[in-house]
Image 1 (cartoon, rainbow, N blue to C red):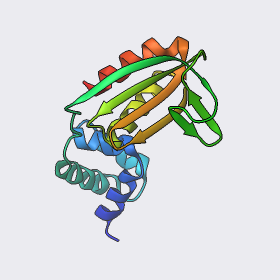
Image 2 (cartoon, helix red, strand yellow; image 1 turned 90 degrees about the vertical axis):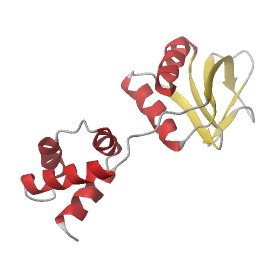
Image 3 (cartoon, one colour; image 1 turned 180 degrees about the vertical axis):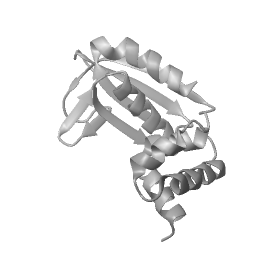
Amino acid sequence: MTLAERARAAAREHPFMHDALAVGVLNYSAAARFLDVGEEEAVAAALRRYGEQLDAPAREADVRVTMETGLGRGDGGLLTVGDTGFVPGDGSLTAILVSGEVSLGLCRRVLGSCETAEIDVLGAGFGESVILVVVERRDGPDALRLVESVCS
């Protein structure tokens, strides 16, 4: 495996780095030191070339973001994660629903943004045309604004 191949493989192991490469905001020297797969200048050059080949993540064109409050834990419902189901009712949870032309990349950006904003995600699901994120009721408004900004 060449140094360039090792650098690309190492960058793909870190989604944040791959995203930064795609949008052209990566500090190549710092990334080369972080990856530690070879001589820093050569790895930085390989990352620069790799980044030039990547397309920036597309913005989602046609999505709708809504919020449903009052979710609780139970059987069935909107989402089941392991043994935990989230059902509409009189619970203390909120669901943020993104519907339309969604992608796995958008789901990753939504969840990453929640993590960065320190919004605890209690459950999440991704499907062909939907992303569902469950948070505590008190986090619902902030999560809604955050998800809307990620999707716009």
